[in-house]
Structures are given as C-alpha cells and as structure tokens.
Length: 537
Image (cartoon, rainbow, N blue to C red; front, top):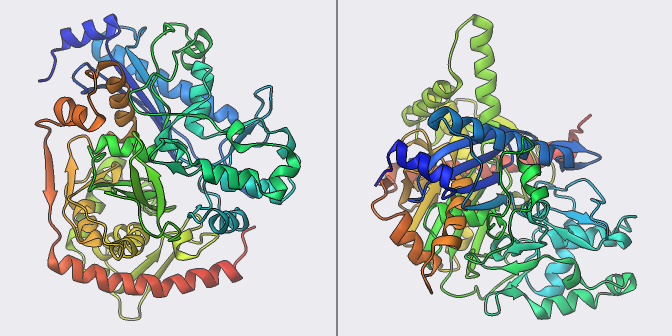
C-alpha cells in the first residue's frame, strides 16, 4: 500500500528510508525507497567512458564527482517533492557495472586508470586461465586483467596490494571496508557455490603459476572479502558521508549492504534469484541470467559465463558488450535533423514514437541489418567495434524497418549466446526484462520474447533498474526476519501484488527473428573485415 506524503516525510526525517546507487555505463542513478520498498525519489548523473591509451576508462575524479552529482540530484528531488532535506538513511547500498580492473598499492593509491568491462585486451590471459583452471574466464573478468598485466610485464604489477571492482572501490571509500558481494566477486574470480567463497583449488592453481610465484604474491591476499546478501558490509563513515554529500547534511553511521554488480541487482530488481528463473538486463550492455538447478557439466563453454546470485547460487550468464549505444546514437542523429529543421521535439517522446514504429516493421526488418558494435563483442569474435548498417539490394528502407532492425540487432548477440545455452538443456520457468529499453510499452519486450522464444515479463519497476534493486538489497539487510531467504523476502515484501505484464512469443515474430539472425551472423563477417581493414585515428 502506498504511503501518504506525510508518512513519507516522517520516514525521511526518521531515517527509515533505504538508498541504492548504481554506476551504469552511461548514467549513475540513485533510488530512495520508503519502508514499503517503493521508490520515492530519484537522482541521476549522466557520464560516458573515454578511450585513453587503448583502454576504455572513467577517471577517478569522474567516479566520485559523478557520485556526488547523482546524490545532489537525489537530495534536490527529495526537497522538491517533500519540502525536507535528506539527512539520515536507514541503509545504503552501492552497485556498479561488473568486472574490470582497479588495482591499488599499499597506501590505497590507484595504480592505473580504471579498466572497464568494455576492454577486450586480455585475450591471452583469459585463454590461458580458461585452460589452466578448466573454467571459462571471460576477457572482462578482473583476474584476466591482473594476469594479463603480469604476462605483459606492466610496471605497476609488483606494487599491487589490492584490486577490486567499481562497486567495491566506491564502497571502500564510503565505509573503509574491502569487501564485495558474492555476485560481484564472481566476476573477479571463480566462486565455489558450496563454500560461498573463491574456489580454493583454482586459487591454488593460480598462485602456483610461475609468473605469479616470481612476484611473490598470493591472489587471495589481493581480492576483496566475499559477503552474502543480507550481511552488513560496514557503516557509512564520517569521511564517507562527506564524500557522498559535500554539503555536510548527511549523517554517518547507517549500515551499508555488500557492494553488488549490476547483474546481481538486476536479479533482485526482477525477482529472479530462485532456481529456473531468469532475467535480461538491457542497457549499454545486455546480459541474460538464468539461475541453475545445478552447475553445468561443461564449465568452459566460451559463450556462457558462470557467476552467482547475490546469495551464491550458480548462474549461467550470457553477456554481450553492446546493446543500446548504437540506438541512442541513431536517435541523437534523428533529433539533430529535427533541430536543423526547427522542430522542437522532446527526446523522451522521440524515443517513444520511434520505438512504437518498430511494431509496424517487417518481422525480419525488411532486409535491413545492423552490427551495433560500438566496442568489441567477444561472443561474435569481434575485438574492436565498428557500428555498421547494411541494406540488401531490395530492402524496404522505412523508418519502421530501420527501428525494428536496431532493436532486433541490440538483442542479436544475446540470441546467439542463448541458442547455445538451450543446447545445455537449461530450463527457464520465468524470464523478466528490465532496463530503460523496456519503458516503451510492449516494443522491446515483444522483440525480446521472439529472440528468446520464451514469455517475457516486464514489471512496473522495470525502468528503475539496478539502483532500485540495490535499495531493496539494503532493505533486506536491515528488515529481514530471522532465517528469511532473499527469495522469500522478495516474494513477501517487494513483489507481492506488483503489477506486471507478460508477453508470450508471437510465432511470426519468432520466425522473422530466426531469419534475421542468420543474416546477422553473415554480416558479422563484414564486421570482422572492418576490424581488419579500417583503422581508428
């Protein structure tokens, strides 16, 4: 039941709200929840990665200036809506894009700029570790970055005393604790779902590598401590409170839940932490997560990552580096035409109209094809992205087909990966979609259902995304009953009675997508040729 404005004001002033902040690839978002886990205020800050010295990165200054700007936006929203200043929180949680590499020396100094998940620079290390550990190590995983730095003889390596993810870094600065949720940790180094810790046998294998022994390091001493959802991961320090809110209004002391990756918050935000449930999180990247009944027999399938839920259960993940970036670029291009012609069009309305037009397009996009790879795409064998649009000779080049092509291509690599997962006989009872791409009613949802050939549910909170999921994780930490599991808490206190819509796959849409994906694979060879022959200045 929704709280009244007066009740919300009392909760804000009484410090009974929970806050989730998530670093996305293009936006940092904060969601403040009331005691009923309903969003009551939102803050945002837009940012973008930069390609510096061959690595996709965000500077250390951007990481914390963006955090402060996002929190200031949230504070302003609270004041505008409720006439009070946000000073006290009941609980807090930080989440962020998973993987990547943030190494620090013994004094806590960042040794190299943040290397994000987007970098495909660790092929040598990832391939070697997959063979050594008999476990698929993706290029974006933190251990692949560390081992590649070792193999390449990078100067900073002997100084490394700790490395973590973006969420772990921000959490450390806010609380002083070098910890990580098991979900985010599973993107740093393989996890043993029985012990709920880093896999001890794989740790030993890594430490015994000649190049590692020569450095005199043990990787377990460099990794953050693993925690499960529901555990207290520290408290907001005075320095942390001032870092988050330089204005000085925020009081320190609130408990902070384990820092999580965007995959884990996506599972929470879609109530898909139980076995045989799954979700698709779509933003700059897109990935599907399916909670397994048991570990896969073959743990080296290159298209499938094996990670965990926020409580440590095994998950099959199909991760694709590219999703909405190319769509956003094309919408920006079309908006620039409107600006040129003197038309005033709201950007949100433009997105909606263009997306809705896709429903009028041909089921196979009428002979139009896109490789929407702004960055590399490992599943497709692409190291450096060159976004391409190809028209067959007799294609119907209409705006409806153009938009349908863009949305279908955004999910194209995801379909390629999940078609492989189907062969592993993985069962899915429920599949949820979340992220801003689903805000326009039915459009991306119906196309995703065709891609996955499975019913897709979009909940009322789909557009709130991972920041809301992390606010819920913070709520679970402070409000769960004795012995109450995360799945039970979500069912009883968060999703009970929540509105949502489920779309079954349309047979004609599925057939059209199957035809589309064959051309998608063919055009991928053109994409590879572009990588081989076109150089970036």
